[in-house]
Amino acid sequence: MPKHIFVLTGAGVSAESGLGTFRDKHGEGIWARFDPMKLATPEAFARDPQTVLAFYDARRRNLVNAKPNAAHFALARLERALAARGGGLTLVTQNIDDLHERAGSKEVIHMHGELFKARCLECGSVRPWFDDLEPSHACPDCGSPGSLRPHVVWFGEMPLRMDDIEDALRRADLFVAIGTSGAVYPAAAFVAEARAYGVPTCEINLEAAENAYCFDEARYGSASETVPAWVEELVEG
Ligand code: BJW
View 1 (cartoon, rainbow, N blue to C red):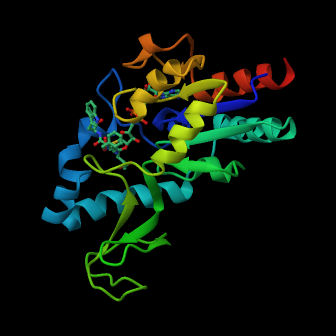
View 2: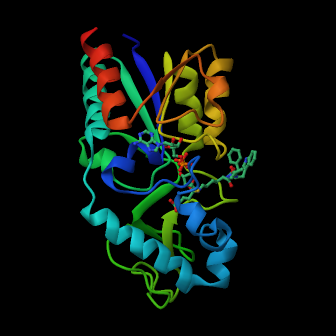
């Protein structure tokens, strides 16, 4: 069993928990119904904060009732198994939900931020936030009015913890991408980076990602079945 595994997850890992994906080949994702340029850019937030906040309020309320699925639990099991063998799992998610944590994963890098956190544009403080966000809310830390935004990474913004991610890619013995379309950068380029370091790569997905040609191996099927089966093979094999 490889000692250091890098797993990148995307919306597909949470699809069976009832959280929508952004894009699929049948035109049914979130971005087929909503224009990302009007909801997921800093310019959209500056122009129309009410609309952007309402979009995230609805998704935050939905997340309260969502539950982790078998794929999330299997990745938590993998983290424990690797730690027990003196290795480690780097779990990087593009998802802003907290389902990996609720399934028991201890270390999760949320490169696109977290829906249950708010950030102040004035003082930079980041706080847990479970309620709706109003444009009129004042920052609890600096008191600045109307300065709170969801702690998520929009198009044109720098994803979080890129240095930690680069280090982990370099150290990995195996790179696995689960439930991500390979359409959004820089996450879509991690597989090419891993390959450049000589790390074997595997895609686990419902259907082939846009960057599927970059992977050494592929396993296709729903995450709730393929991920537990893959973890079982690794841990017991
Ligand atoms: C299942 C399943 C089941 C379904 N089981 N599987 C290079 C080239 C071109 C463009 C760029 C480039 N570099 C940067 C850009 C610009 C831009 C970008 O990538 N644009 C593209 C659209 C072309 N990127 C950025 O702006 C990023 N910032 C940046 O690059 O800064 C500069 C920089 C450069 C280099 C290094 C460092 C910095 C920021 C991107 C921010 C993305 N934000 C969003 C919204 C976050 C908040 C929110 O949730 O609202 O993040 S967009 C959205 O897409 C969200 C996701 O995290 C992200 C990725 O989506 P994901 O997870 O792949 O989901 P889907 O829906 O696309 O795919 C689902 C998959 O699951 C599918 O494959 C299904 O088959 C599968 N699936 N059900 C298993 N049951």
